[in-house]
Amino acid sequence: MRLRTFQRLIVGVAAALASVIALAQAPVEVSFFYPVAVGGPITKIVDGLAADFEKENPGIKLRPIYSGSYQESIAKALTAVKSGEPPVTSILLSTDMFTLIDEDAIVPFDDLVKTPEDTAWLKSFYPGFMENSQTGGKTWGIPFQRSTVVLYYNKEAFKEAGLDPNKPPANWKEMVDYAQKLTKRDASGRVTQWGVQIPSSGFPYWLFQGLAIENGVNLMNAAGTETYYDKPEVIEALQYWVDLVKKYKVHPEGIVEWGTTPKDFFERKVAMVWTTTGNLTNVRSNAKFDFGVAMLPANKQRGSPTGGGNFYLFKKSTPTQREAAFKFIKWVTTPQRAAQWGIDTGYVAVRADAWETPAMKQYVAGFAPAAVARDQLPYAKAELSTHDNQRVTKALNDGLQAALTGTKTPEQALKDAQRESERILRAYK
Image (cartoon, rainbow, N blue to C red):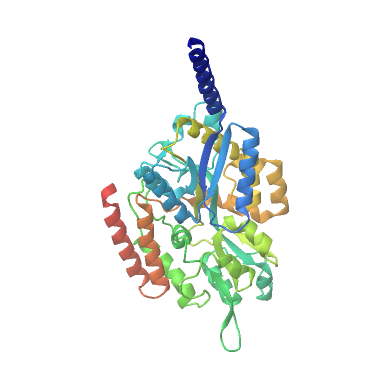
């Protein structure tokens, strides 16, 4: 009897030991939300990166979850936080930083930065991208798929209009002059090709921020507690956008869709468009004509907001999961991979040494437009980001659309947006 009891005990201990060993050997699962918001086969690239990382790190299982647009992704992430099952890491807009901090959803990276190599890695990113990644002396986001707004133009349309195809508009006046020459109408007066198009759905605040910066003012303070929507320079910037539509008649009326703007460019419905450098590979693959890429035209100065997504680490993950995610984030942002990501997608490689890699040098030598966004970075400013960012940004988006559709003047639209923004931000001052 004792022998059987002893045997059962041995079997039980062996089973428990086997399950402990199995648990120890079970890969650490790292789930991450990935927003698919820009054209191109990006999911295949992300799946490929995950597979390559897992081969090199068999103890870690990466689980990319494709979560829709950036707006859908932040909504899903915050819902997951409230339900107690957030992802371990996510790529969300750099401008979501204050919202994620306020929701107590994320942890800073600083506690994971332990070695001199880690410190050097953290310092390797462009300062312009870190403006939307750090606050209060801590690093909350790591730049990954980052961008600026650039001007794409049809060189063939330039030639037809008697314009130099290698000389894009350098300032606001030239953009109007060029757009007037590029706008085509048929015998009945219907427009068959617009001169210029700036999207006003999806991210209208972002495109507009380029105009405001070019007119000498950014839209918010660094602490995310104030906005400057009703400054005279900002009102002037919106008046210029409205004038492209109403006064000069070189820009489509109403709300111009973000998602269809590249297609309108491919189909020669418009000769010049403002959109993200993240569309560069998409344009290169689909434009059946010679095109150029340029920095945005200046008024008082050159300028563009930075844009795009950062990696964040979620609080309700285990220390082991966070360490595994940190390992992946460092791996995917090495100079070689940051360069290849930029080549494959059109996003701006987020660190200067990525541009010194042989692959990137060869790419730029064969495709000069790839370097435009990098060269614009010294003029770039932090993207609009505040506490309660979605509501503060919505106030501006609503105002911009009201002005562009003619239901409010630019001045009234921006004064109303500023009043709403001040009401929302009062709690954070």
